[in-house]
Image (tube, rainbow, N blue to C red; front, side):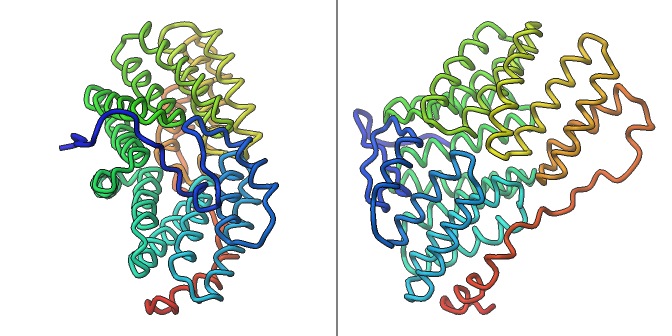
Length: 371
């Protein structure tokens, strides 16, 4: 179902958010270096602004990313450029997803799908479809997310976009992992690893190694799991993406914890927490606190475990991460009794996209879908 029939051999990595901003990135994309390169470029080209937004997002600067992408969308809409506006909204939606405004992110990304289809921008359409799938997966809506990732995989395969193929396979692997289907999760991540190595996609390779390691860890193969997780961390740190590096460290902490290496686990969780705090990512931070709670639970320090689970719950509520909230609430109930399970564990939607509403209305009018 998920076989990838693509040409093997050396393949040029396609990074459209940087290419459209005028860069010709190496496969070993370092976002700090990319940001410096883009900062030296003069001009008011809105594609340049979107490129800067995407790099800022990965460096953990979501406010700057939203400002840049919103400004680009306004410029494109004024010019009547539907394709450019859709590309900008893809960036806006991706940033909203990252900060936990998942409902708004999904709406904006669906707008990007409609606009890129209207403008016949095939690259923008593929990325917007993949963005909707990732947003739905982050919300815990796994069935529609699965279909979205399958659709994105087909589109990326048809275009020969290996980076996109890796992205889609990793999304499918994550869903299998969350469904506790670890064998199939490992298979999907191994396919992603293959294609990331073919295309020398260091970021994709880092996430794929992380995914293989997480599956192996859940299956009890702790020695190989930790090896994959360490290698994944090395790749993700090389990209300069604070968010990616944070998730790599968090996963390594999980792997060390499952292997019984609890002191090492706490060290990795501490590193991950520092990265997520710096990147203003409450969702990632929440998973770290949940992991620390699990360490204290393993050492029977239940009062400390409760403290970290409660902090995780607060962070998951702040980020709209329903799946993380369920995990921490279940863990809290196990160590704290029924009193800690009572109450409302629903999530109030994170609202951050209000400032984009006027340009979305103008954009939807432009493509004929109404306000």
